[in-house]
Amino acid sequence: MATPTNHIGIVGVSSEGCALFYRLVTRFAGTRRSPNEQPRISVHNEPLSAYLDCIRRDDWHGVGKLLRKSAEILARCGAGICLTPDNAVQYGVQLAEVGSPIPWLTIPELVGEQLAKDKRKVVGILGTKLVTRSSTYQTHLGLRGIQVHAPSEHEAERLDRIIFDELIYGTTRPESHEAVLSMVQHMYEGGCEAVILASSELPLVIGVDNCVLPIYDSSEILAHAAVERTTPGAN
Image (cartoon, rainbow, N blue to C red; front, top):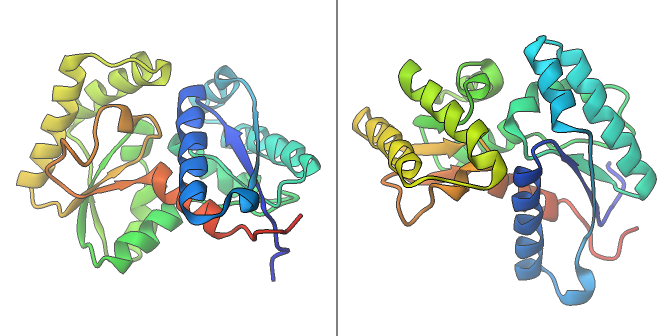
């Protein structure tokens, strides 16, 4: 049995995504807990450039080491669990778990659980090419009998540029909003029952008010799980 904890450790990769996620955790905790039962939250990050260098070299052990380094620091701060809202490094989390002093929460597994609970069978996915064109989600969801529809090659290239040139800096252009919503429309027309936002910055351009499909926001699902796994009064 896991040791009770009321201290969440957040491993940052993209600063914008980490900031958005921190806000999600505090907002969700505020709706579920009294003011004197709020969880402690610690954040640590290595430079985004260090992660990108490893990813470009296909050095996932290097990504895992960066993640585990943050986990070790967060553990020394008193965190009892750790997680990262960055979808692009989720494969590296499996490597970071080896020798980690505290347990990790992983996004694909949590998203898969929610989709299965809601009996979704065909879903679209939006994120970087590294996520949508890899087994990051496809394996977890496929084992649950869920089909995953990724953007076309052209759309994936466009979405990559939007995420890396705009969203990670907290900016968006009107045409980028239109492009992302057009991708979701194509998924809707292709028979998708819902769409996964597999990038922590995508809520900057898409939400329940402008999306034709039900949204499974990976960051929101992770934030909910983090708060639910903490114990008021622990630590």
